[in-house]
Image (tube, rainbow, N blue to C red):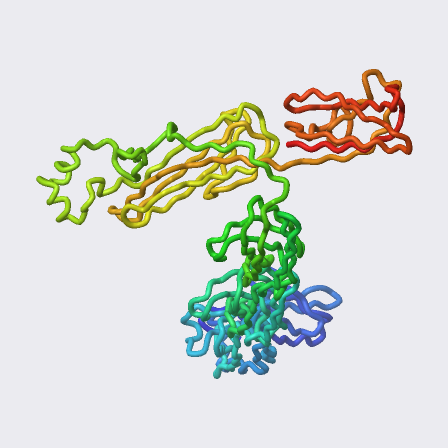
Amino acid sequence: MAGDGTILVHLDLHFTLQDAEKAVFYEGGNIIGESLTGVFRRENVTSGATYTIQCTPVSGVGASPVSQRQTVSHAVIGKAAKPADVTGFLLAATLTGVQATWNAIADIDRSEYEIVPSGGTFGTVSPTYRGKALSFNLGLLAAGSHTFWVKAIDTTGNYSTAYTAASLTVNAPAAPAVSSSVTKTDYLLSWSAPASTLPIDFYQIYVGATFGTATLIASPKSTVFQNPVDFAGTRNFFVRAVDLAGNAGSVANASVTVTAPSAPTVTAQVIDNNVLLYWTDTEQTLPIDTYQIRRGPVFASAEVVGTKSGLFTSLFETAAGTYTYWVVGIDSAKNAGTPGSTAVTVSQPPDYVLKADTDSTFSGTKSNMAQDTDGSWITPVSTSETWQSHFTSRSWATPQDQVNAGYPLFAQPNASPGYYEETIDYGTVLASNRITVTLNTQDIAGTVAKSCTISVSANGSTWTDYTNVWEVYATSFRYVKVRTTFTAAAATDLLRVVGLNIRLDSKLKTITRMVSCNAGDSGGTIVYMTDDATATGLKLFLDVDAVTITPQATAPVIPVYDFVDIPDPLSLKILLFNTAGARVSGTASLTVRGF
């Protein structure tokens, strides 16, 4: 029943009715119930309390007088026996955590159950659980072995004699089996869900040489991970699962190897001054994004002259010589492969004619250049020093002090860099020309590096620059600006510039047309020298050098052309005459050559 003032379940009282039909029960003068058998159950009694109950028999003639009521007083004594021990205590992992379950004890006055971690003291520590239910979710437990105890509690507050224990080991996720592959431009990691006591929440993916130094790059919830390849060589990936409790599992490793493009086999065909380059496909792990073409004897310093997505390109060379061309594949991850090369010999381009040949008088802009007594120019030297400051600024008292300092020539130490710049106005816009710069120099001391920038402009204000070249093919320009730069590697290096030549070579153009000449055309049949043979087409010639007309007839025909030799000519007229001097109609072949 109860002890220590705890509310118990009930108190059963028995009265004799004799000849009465029923009994009415009183407590403190108030009716608390009635019974046909004389048995009365007083609910919610308290240990240590005394209850006085009166019973009045009721017959057919009515209730007995108060004086005939039966009275009983009963003192409630707490239950001496403890509740039974709990049985069937189990721990099991579920989707929401570790679930504890147990069987109900048979005691009629059971009140609650209490769960504490193993080693805990019932009734004195904060319990993991206390309640009337027969199950409880212990939550998401960390990896390791977990043991809990359970006892029953009766309504008096008595605990079971012995606790019942249950244990469960929460294992962190095992290492997943990871596979890797490369698909087009991406790498793909995939794995199956590994064994785990608690459900897996997500996965962690790391990249690095070792797991201890690796960098976390993703935390997907799926069992696949795809990402663009942005590397070459072998890259290590590490994958582990993390369960709902945050327990990180064992690590699995997978590697992805990306091979850069291979070296292409490069072949070439030369037609006049056109170089046709062909090469083989170099794709390896990743698709080729583009091929880079370079020109120069050494790949590292060769000039980039173009990029192509296919396996062919053509290049136009404006000067004869032997050229080495390089082709290197660049894949989708921007990995440059091994270059392949071929060397070809290009003859002097046909139909180029000298149009301008200028020997510089060095009247342009100079920096750190001083003229010698023979008219040549010494560079790079300081032109702001006086004879006195040349010595005093360096604390030299005599020329011998300079020699002792390691500078045997007066112009030493130099003032690198120096440069000379000159602009030439050719008077009219030129359609297309090859510009060649030739520098005549002599080494005085050491080696001075020489470079050239050629710039062209149609208006003298907006320029197109070609850096580190001595020759360039340019179109639609009137002005040419040349800057030669002189850079010394050591303070003693000096150079003598003897001469500078700037040359223009024009490509000779030729058009050939069949013209139907009408004797009725006033002043002759007009032929337009444009790209589409109309008055509004693009003019083909800056200047015309020669016109040849060949009549297509069985009888003698004399051709005559009417042409005004002006810059940028648009057209000419053709007239056909017979031997009697009369205009005739017919067909003639026209050939025009010029620049």
